[in-house]
Image 1 (cartoon, rainbow, N blue to C red):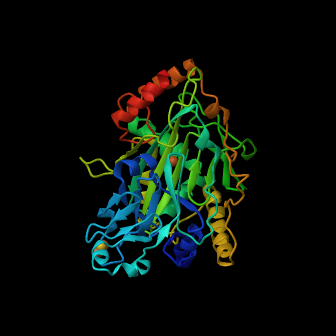
Image 2 (cartoon, rainbow, N blue to C red):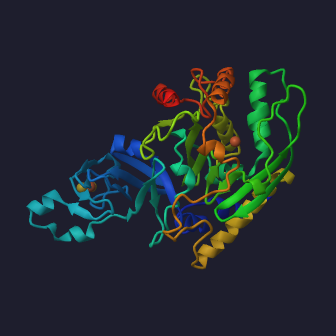
Image 3 (cartoon, helix red, strand yellow):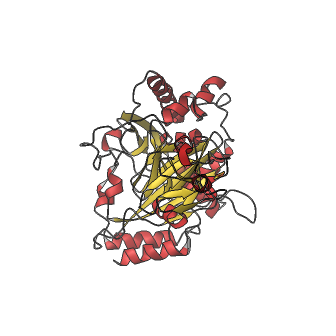
Length: 431
Ligand code: FES
Ligand SMILES: [Fe+2]
């Protein structure tokens, strides 16, 4: 249980709030590279700020404030003109950092001299792992961390995105909550498949957490189970590596990386980079890793208005949204299950203090020599980098296809995987 004051410190992300200032020391993924190349201009709301992202024709990405400094029109309705974004109202144009590069009528009227004052806020951008990243904090910006899974090539990569009507921090707390796998993903799935089955996943006996440079490693001991009990996850000690809950809002398992990007205090952009390991007879890379396919997954079933609950990520969404727009931590009853959460909250409160004192927060990288394929303590990493045998792959596929929640007979951790992505994945598995 937390005080209301601490709950607000942990959840509010606007400019000038302690968490808002902490989060502004990190890079944020905001859109797949392919999506912004397709759309050329798109609105972005991040940490409560309204922005516009655009792909200039010289290949650079621009992230600037949404409102035109002339008379406030919405620049996300503008268009790309060479290296500039042009406002639809009177044609003023801005470069990737928000400097004004054109005021058509003022130029005709011989009044172009005040261009220097007609700027909007502009921010650094970068691309990595198939995503566009942005930085809203004080400069010089830290480096965008280049974690090793972004370079793995023995898998098929896709990015799925869903906007959630709840605060980001309750989503992130899920990253230090291994027990939910047994219930939310194991037993709930079993019950949905067969309502007579009350419990089928092997149970957690203990959990442990260890902090490392970029976040927390989760360990767990799973019981042997009995007849008909399915071991949903293997046991792992933190020394062996594990599921990672990373600064500031990343869950990294190896097969997936999930970012719970704060749009504002009341909504979150869940971005998932899924890495489906390919058979080891396929030699990667099978994709351009800077231009991996993407899709937007639905949150609700249009026929019922209820949150979809069949696939793993949708089950997480149902849990987080159900906690309320901002989870009320003054009313909770934490137990041993939650020891990771308690530690996570404490560390966030500490890091806010460090930033207020002018220091870089945990997980910040500034050493260029080090920032290459940074190794992470992911459990059983070799199964992602080395592939799996063709036989094991076929067995896995058959097992997934037997699930009533398979999408067109294919495994998907999130509902709504489109046919064109399934087709690309299928091609990749054939080499
Ligand atoms: S409001 Fe943008 S050019 Fe006038
Ligand atoms: Fe989950």
